[in-house]
Structure formats: structure tokens, C-alpha cells
Amino acid sequence: MLKRPSSRRRSTPTDVQINLVPMLDALVTLIGFLLFSMSFLSLVSIETPKPEVNPDTVEKKLQERPLQLTVSIREKESEIWSPFERIQAKVIPHTSEGLPDTKGIHEALIEVKRGFLGENKVVLVPSASTSYDVLVAVMDSVRGLEPTDPPLFRPNATTGIEEPVKALFPEVVFGNLLGEN
Amino acid sequence: MSRLRSIRFRRGRKKHREVELQLTSMMDVLVIILVFLLKSYSTSTNNFTTLPGLKLPISASQDLPPDSLHLIITPEGMTFENERIVEFELSAGSLADETTYAIKKVDLAEDGRQIQPLYAALIKARDRAELLRAKSRARDESGNPLPFDGVLAIQADKRVRYDTIRKIMYTAATAGYKVFRLLALKRES
Image 1 (cartoon, rainbow over the protein chains, first blue to last red):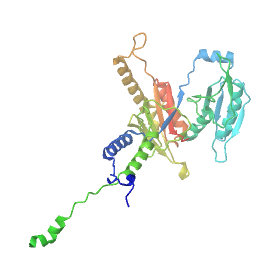
Image 2 (cartoon, chains in turn blue, orange; image 1 turned 30 degrees about the vertical axis):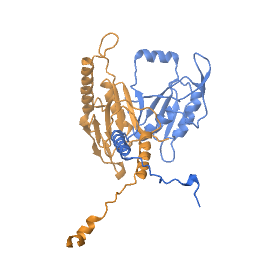
Image 3 (tube, helix red, strand yellow; image 1 turned 180 degrees about the horizontal axis):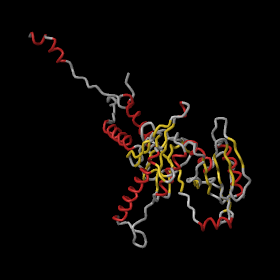
């Protein structure tokens, strides 16, 4: 019986193999370079300016009575207040671990922000025993807005269109560099 | 004839088979590693170092710190620009866990607010920076050398107390530094 023409093919299929060795060389070199130049320590920063005091600004402040939002961290409680009594002071007790209630501070500051949408500055007055860890946690709660926070909108000065507020009080200044508490 | 029968000769007659290494699976692994490295590769411009044993706090901040003068504070001492400048002394409390490190009184000035060795190091670094700026070709609009930026990056252990950080900021402020960058580890989202 004769085979059909299509099945008369005599040539055997040859294995085509790609030479992977040069590609492997390139990959190993690239991985070596990336590992060498990679930074495994991902650092971020919180910037705070040196507090400035001069008689002219003090005089101006006494006349204008700005918000000057202040967050004081004491041994057993935190307080959110204004030296010019622009807001009602709020005392937030520390958690059962003896640490500032950062969530409570954050929620109280959102309420303050609703009334002062253009305000960005906050004065932080921590007690001497506050650890750097707690300081950073409080600064985070004071500066940023979480995705779960209620949205805040502020009208744009030029267009008048309401835009979402992206940060709470991002400019943190330490208020007691000279203090003894 | 005896040569043809010898075992060594018979072994030699065997055909050399080509042994091919399966590189495909290795390529797969390397490509995965490469993708992971490229994804987590950060192109930050700073060269901040750290010290062994330093425990940094975690922050939600997204600001990447640019390169600047760099102070590391561990519970045992201070390191400025990779040079140990202050050693703290151990002050024992009544309980074992009250034992803390404190700045030596001989290192303090201005009613305990200023840290003398740090002040000297900061002034020296400031003078060096100003000298470099004076020699540089970069000038401001009126042709004067660019002013000293006065930025100090502070990388403190999470156990360090605000009392120490406050003294450092006061010392830096008196030495002409205007901005402090508090460094922390980035919180993974």
C-alpha cells in the first residue's frame, strides 16, 4: 500500500535550540549590578524648620490672633489647643500602654482642619521623656491624611473649584527647644 | 593485541557524549529575581549610612531625604558624618529598666541646652561647606557664592528621648542650621 504524499516526508524534524548562555551572562551581570547598587534601607524624612522668633512677628501675632495650633504631649495626656483661644482646647488621654493616642489626636485634628482649611502649620510641644518612636508617630498623625479619613475639600483660590485637601497640618515646628518640661 | 583487550583502551574507545545543561529553569529563576530587583530598586540620591544595632522608627511619610549633613544618635552616643563625636554616660536608675544613657555634663553648655562637641563639629562642617561654595563657580543672581543651606539630617534610635533631640536641634540652630530632617524607615504600604 502506498503512502499518501503528505506522509512521505523523510526528513526528521531537527531540534532547534536557542543558545541561552549569552543571555544568562547578561542576566547574571545585571543582577550583580542591581544587587551592588541597591539600597536595602528605605529611608524617609520629616522636615521641620528651626523655630523663628522676633519681636515684629510677636507684635503681629498679638494683633492678628492666628490659630497657632499647638499639640502638647504630656506624661499622661495630649492636648490640642490654641494660645489665642481660636479653638476649644481638647485633652486626649494616653492609651492603656501609656502612649499618646495618635488615632484620637488625628481625629481631633481633622475636626480642627474643617474649620481652618487653609492652615498648614502646627506647633508640637512634646515632653522631655517622649521617645523618638512616639515623636515620629505623633508627627505622622498630625501631618498626613489616611485614605480612610473623611474627605475634606477646599476651594481653589484662582478657579474657585473645590479641590480635595491632601494633607492635614504638614508643617510641624517644635515649640519648646528652650523649655525644661 | 593485548593492548586492544586492556580495560583502559576499552574505556578510551567509548564515544564522548555531549552533556547539555538544562538552562531554561535557571533562566526562569534569574528572570524572576531580575524583575523583583527592578521593582524594588530605588533611585534615591542620598548616601545615608546606618550603624549596627540602630533601631529606626517607622514613618508614613513619603518624602525621600536628599543628601545632607548627617547625624546618627544611638542610645550610647552620637556620630556626625561617620565620626564619633559624643559618648553618652550611663545613668543608673533605681530599677534595672530605668537605666538610661545621658549626655555627660562636661559636654554641655548654655545651662545644659548646647552640646559642645556637636557644636564644634557642626561649625567645622559649616565652614567647610561655605569654603567649598566660595570656590565653586555656582553663583546667585548678584554674583555671590550660594548661601549655606543649613540642613541637618537626624537619624535617631527609636529609644532616644526628645530631651536629647531637643538639645541637638538647639545646638544646630545656634550653629546656623535652619532645617532639620528627622529620618525614619518607610512604612510598607
